[in-house]
Every structure is written in C-alpha cells, then in structure tokens.
Length: 396
Image 1 (tube, one colour):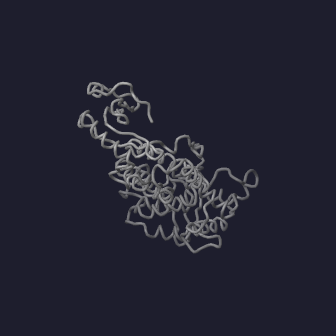
Image 2 (image 1 turned 90 degrees about the vertical axis):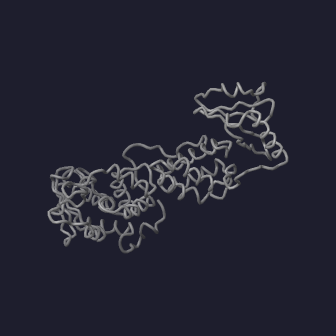
Image 3 (image 1 turned 135 degrees about the vertical axis):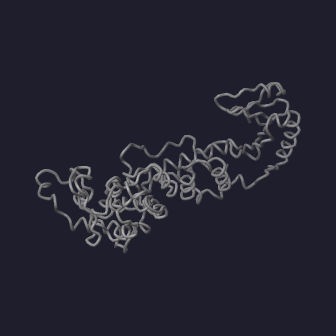
C-alpha cells in the first residue's frame, strides 16, 4: 500500500494542487485507498488503489473538478466495498489482456504518428503471437527478455532495440491508463550497441523490405528493388538512363562520369532485374529510368524511404545498408568470393590489392554474372537454389 497522507483532502487542496515535472498522487486519510492524481499537464483525477488477491488494483473514479470531492468519496467507498468482497468491478475485462490493450495503444497513442505502421508490424510480428492472450499484470521481465533475445538471435540487433523501445512505451502508456502498476521492461538494457555504418539487414528484414517495395509502385518501388538486387549505390541507380542498358545482353554499363570512383563499371542484370526493367514505363524522349516528370532523375528519397519503413516494419536502417547486406550475405551464405563481390560493388580497393589488382581489373565477369543470378534466386526471385531462397531459409 502507498503511504497515506496524515490529513484529509479538502476541496482547496485539490484545487490548489500544482503540476510538477512528474505526475504525483495525493492520498486521502479520511477515505483510505482513495487519492488524487495530478498529471504533468495539470489534469487531476480521483482514483482508488488497493491490493486485491496479492496484486495492486487501481480504479479511476473521474476527473476533478468534474467529479466533486464529496461525490468522489461516495464512489470510492462503493468501489472499496466491491474490492473487499473480492469483486474487481472491471468495466472492461478484455482491456486487461495484452492483445486488447495493444490494439487500444496503437489506436489512441500511436495512431497519429507517421511510424504507426512500422510499430504495428513489428509488434504483430514479434510480440503479439507470444503475449496477446496474456493478462497485462502476468507479463514478466523474463517474458520480455525472451522476446528480445529471440530477435537478437536472428541477427536483427537493431530491430531488437526498436521492439524493446516500443514495449517500453506501451507499458508506460498502460500505467498512465491505470491498466498496470509497473513496467516489466524497467532495467532491461538495449541488446545491441548501435554504431554508424555497420547495419547488416537480416534475411527476414530483407524479405520484408522486398515485399513492401513490390507494393509501392513506380518510381520508388522498382528503384528500391533494383538497389536490393544489384548491390549498387543509390544515385547510380536513381540517376540511371536507358542508354546505359543492354537488356538483350543483360548488361548495365555505368560510365565513369557517374561512378563514385570515376571508373566505368559493368553490372550484370539477373533475370528478375531484366523483367523489372522491362515493366518500367518508357516515353519517347525521356531518358531516365526513374523519374516523376520525365525531365530529371527522381528525387524525394527521404519521403519515399519513410513510406517504405512504414510498409515493411523494419526500423533503423538506411538505403546504403542494402549494399552492405548484399556483400555480407553473398559471401557468408552463398559462399561467393569477396574478390568477386568487390568487383560487383566497384570498390576502389577491396580484397584484391597491389599488382594483382592491375591484372584482374577486367576479370571475373563470368563469376560476377553468376553471383548476381545466385543472389536473385537466393532472394526468392528466381528458381530455387540448392541452398534455398529467402522465404525458406533459417534466419541467420
């Protein structure tokens, strides 16, 4: 039980209670278990809080001054009598279950946020299947740790951080709504130390991004898919023109004037990429693959990326991470030589250095072609490889 005040609440005390940096409660000594909560915003509400069958139960009576002190005491006495008899008196029993409370949180607290779809997708994927039918006050710190550990074990450390953040917000909201007395995420540290330029997207995250990109439409949907399937840089894809492509020869030549290192670069086009390019709109006189007005390359990546984030439910990543993830998964899971991947990515200096690099400048063309075909099949965009495709792989 909370420590009670030694004086009874009067109307003057309730009226003059000022908001502070944190919300606080004033307990009444005349009607034990009744109190007044003062929010940071200045909102004041009467409540009853009492231990019932080993757990703390909190019931909101109503806001002050809408509910007068005398009326609050009468209602508090009725609620206390019910609690003493062992009746919870819950008006909405289902709101005490995690799934129902989560739905209400997503609607009331997150509904107007631009990231609500991202939050909903993550909670639906990782949390709801485990906790939906559990009562809120039955959820423990161990439950949360198991969920976060499972996400981390899939290689999605940043996503584990995001889910922990969402859960912490959710449980704090539940406390504010008097649905819960404490937050089970308290004291749980982020499982992954995030640093810049290290993000490797997991297999499941790549699948979510690819599926979301397929729903976006032109120009950004196919552009994002081409980034994922070719491993090339954002502006090299975004500013591409039709004259650079030989669709019959399945080849894309990026001129030195557009490449980061100033060297002309050949990108082999896998069958799914050729099919993707064949479906792009083409208008006579318009040279850019991805454009909104036919005159200039597409712009507005930030807005499109936020939309993709909302659709795919993957948090904390950049478009450049697609390139890093391509390099990581092709070497680690497909067994492709880092030398070949460096050639595909057109790195200035990579796994091959010195004199050897001079003699190998134009080499590995066949291996590069095969590697990009393998990557497309690995991503589930072509016929199945012996080692599976994206949807059927065990998560790394």
